[in-house]
Every structure is written in C-alpha cells, then in structure tokens.
Length: 400
Image 1 (cartoon, rainbow, N blue to C red):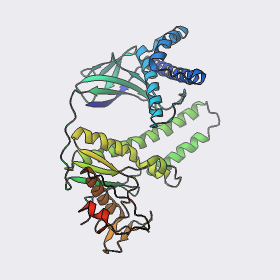
Image 2 (cartoon, rainbow, N blue to C red; image 1 turned 60 degrees about the horizontal axis):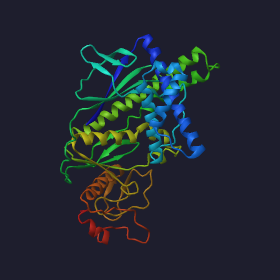
Image 3 (cartoon, one colour; image 1 turned 180 degrees about the vertical axis):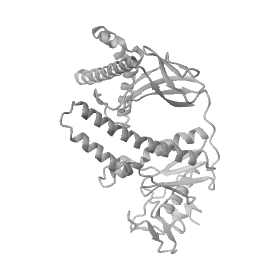
Image 4 (cartoon, helix red, strand yellow; image 1 turned 45 degrees about the vertical axis):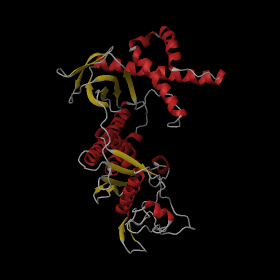
C-alpha cells in the first residue's frame, strides 16, 4: 500500500535561500516545458513527451548555469508532472495546464530518490540541501517513493513522504444490509447516517469570517502593493486562512476515522454529487466550499481501501430525498427549503436528511448485489407509487 506522511521541516536561513532557488528553477522548467509543448504542437502537430524534454533540458542547463544549483532529478520530475497534467487534461479529468506564477501560494518540488530519513536525530537529508531539521513525529517502514518539499503562503515548510510499505490491500469484507450505512451530506447538518446519527456542520469559515473581513480590509487600505506593511498584512490574512483550513481538515479526519474505523459497517454509501456544478450557484457557493464535500468523499474512499470496506457512490439523479422509505411514494412537490415532510400515502412524517440517508443505503445495497437496477425519477405519465409496479417487483423487498 502507498501511504503519505507529512512532516514539518525547519531549514536554516541558508537552506531557505537554496529552497527558494529550487522552487524558482522548477517553476522555470515547468513554464519552459509547457511553452515548448504548445509551440511544437502549433507548428507541426508534434507531441513532445517528458523524455524529449529531458534531452533538451541538458542544453538548457548549459545556457542557464543557475539551473545546476538544484537537483537534476527534481527538474526532471517537474517535466514528468507536466506530462501527467496533459494526460489528465486529455482524459477530461482536469483543466489545461497553466503557466506557474512567481508569487503563487502553491510552491513545491519533488525528489524521486536520494532522500534519507534519520528518525533518531529528527533529520531529513535532501539532495543539494543536505541535512534539514524536522519533527519526525511518526515512524514508518517501507520504501520511499517520492518526497515533496512544500513552502506554504505562511512561509512554513513541509515534507510529504510517499512510502510503499510492501503490504497488500486487505480483501473486501462481506456486505449485508445490516452492515451497510447510508450517508447524506448537507449544509445545515454536515452528515446524516441511516442509523439516525447526525453530525453538525461546524462552519469554520463562517465563524472566522468577521475576523477575516477586518484583516482583508487592512490589506486593501495599503496603497503601495510592494510595501512591507502590505506584505505583513497579507501574511496575517494567509495565517488566518491556514487556521480555517487546518480546522476543517482536522474535523474531516476525525469524522471519517469514526465513520470507517470505529463503525462496524462493511459498506458506506454516499451520493455522487456534482460539486463543481453546485459551486456555480452564487447563493450557496461559499457554504458548499466551507463544508468541503469532495475532501470528505476522498478521505472516506481511501480509508475504506485500507480497511477492506466498500465505498459505493449512487447516481446524483436518484430522488433519495423525495422517496418515502416506508411505502415508496415519490413527493414531486418537495423543495429545498422543506426540511420535514409527511407522506401523502402512508402518513409517515419524515426528517428530510434521515429519509435520504435511508434511501441512499437501500439503493446502494441493492446495486451492490449485482441486480443492475437503478431507481430513477418517475415521469409524470408513470405512477407515483413504486410498490406493485414492474420496477417495484424487480426490486423485491426494496420497500417494506
């Protein structure tokens, strides 16, 4: 299994200068490689690979002697990452690669090998940088694949170490209806489980918004953009945003740990939400960004892989909130503001989130059995009640 370990590093002033040079060299090589690939394709439709650029990189280093101050492997990794970015673009998994800015908040360089870890003395040894003081609070065993050195917008340095521990992923645990949990995510309540348990949304950005407005207002009042006072004010804003991000990450890790490791369920079912599309709604964009659903799904997914549990995503168009989980009646008049509703067929009073979580669990469990049946929104010509219909007969005991 591949696992990543993140450590805080404390370089000296000389090492900080060298790290800045390394980050600048990697940014320069990335922009050079991106420019070469674009111009080559526009000229004669030639697609340059990272291996082609590696050969030209030798001549580039002769023309720019300062590129030799950084590790050659780190420069090659920058071109390899550029190649991966193009591959992801053509697979429609990301946007077209962009040129990197000098003062970007995301600055990093990768070392594929020649990095040594000394847990006894809390030291990480990098190529060219040599020994850097660190806080190695967790030990690991396995082969080091890559080490990523990052500098944050708050002038902090971190080393992310990707390790192959040599262990195989555990086999998938058997799935039963009793050991399946449906999770409905929302804004008012962050997550509602089909078992009835609710996790409130802490709203970290909203709670810190008042202080952020004060700090951002101070930045806007600094007239000279290159002044030291403006730079200090921007640093205070970055520190506060980092605090919000750390709070959110800590909450999501604790929640997913309890959901996966401390829960007896062998399958966790969630909705496949179109988060990017939902962010285009300017009324809800800030609240949706604050809850960070995509990160939540990512954490649940890889933690389920570690424990042999199954993580299932049902279709985003499944009417999980509108279906009565007791009789199967579909409430077409249900709106987003309706947090509770009563079924017109069986008169059952529903909590919207709990009802959705139960339906998500049921749909996910039925799909996991290999029936290939998907519950879709009924058309106006079809009956609103699924029980007794052909689809209801196929689902069997979908509804009691």
